[in-house]
Image (tube, rainbow, N blue to C red):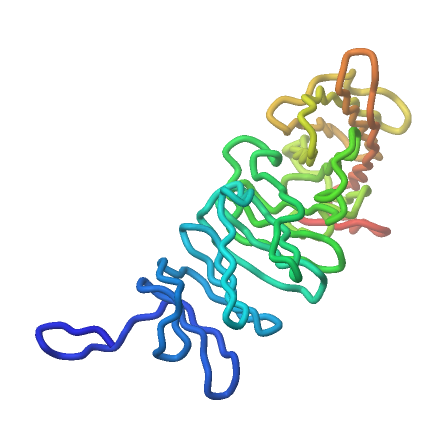
Length: 280
């Protein structure tokens, strides 16, 4: 309880997590509490979670873990890319997964030590991760510039050419289709062009050159051109099958990866069939 003008007022907590039916871990401006009993953690708590009897408290000064009478403090001195902690989760494997302002951190559940880090800057300039989720070894990152999806293994294996590249039409809002489909179907419209967006995830310091070429029914309609700002337009003056080839190069003499995508443009008023997604 706080005292104000001689009266007690309820203590305010910003995050509460149950430990048992009668015991709760509570975090607020004054630190971490078990019910109304204070602990040794006095930093402002932004989020608290309880896993395997460990109490995890996110603060602006790193992550605190209370394990019985033991306390672990993980901050930039321990390897965090940033001390401002946003989210911490546990998915039943060997790692606590912590999101900080600077990246996604994997912490060994047994030792409470950092094992791997995905720096936010590796996704691109000015990227801010607001939230993350993990499902079937796939990490979903909600950012200020859209949703990034990556194989969790890439966080641990940072070898050359281990990047992932995704290409999809701007109007495609199904996030699963964005990262799994290589064939897209749409009806012919008066716009006569479709904007394609490219997302490249890389965990090395490589600078890539990206170009594309468009073919229609086996004939080249757009000569090889550079991709600027991860986007380009495919001219579709008439219905047909358009194949888009994307070339990713780390140097002038080698193409590290070639990606092929198909756009099936059907006449207006005819419903397309087959794999893929469509929209008006």
